[in-house]
Length: 229
Image (cartoon, rainbow, N blue to C red; front, side, top):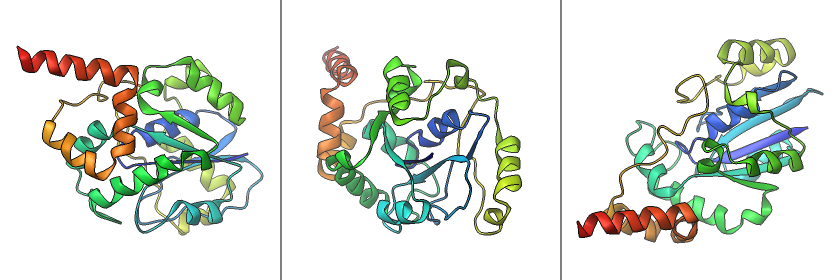
């Protein structure tokens, strides 16, 4: 089986893909850099590849090249996602940051084209619904996968053994995954009314979705209470 994970930069999509890559019998590219499209690969092995939202390579290009059996959209609250990405030196690579968030909103509107949608917040909270979603996709996971035992060396070694030509065609990256296990430590950022206004113009549908989620409503109430204090 081939699984394509698609998400915004700094959304936690690499951490999620690394979680999926803990299966000992699979190949994984946990972070295809923004200046590459998903690769063409000839292998009978199961493989998971993560690509990011850019204006340079639309989802259709990644899908045409990698030929996934399933595609998954990884979402993160755009308020937290934007705050994380705007501090990165690559925020405007392969498209300006604002352009990429506008594109993400269109992907969210068309999310029915994906086989599954997973929220980063549910992933780091270890919501059992994430396990159920992945099981339905045909990519079963285990609780132990939350501990990242398969790391850079093992993942790269497996690629060298099974698809050695791939390493000559693209750079192998490991993203910004921090720590040895899945953690929600970096999940929530301080709320910023000015950023809310910006995102309401860039990705109103995704922002509204997150405001309507139970966690979003609780955060908005807490913010309002803090403003009154």
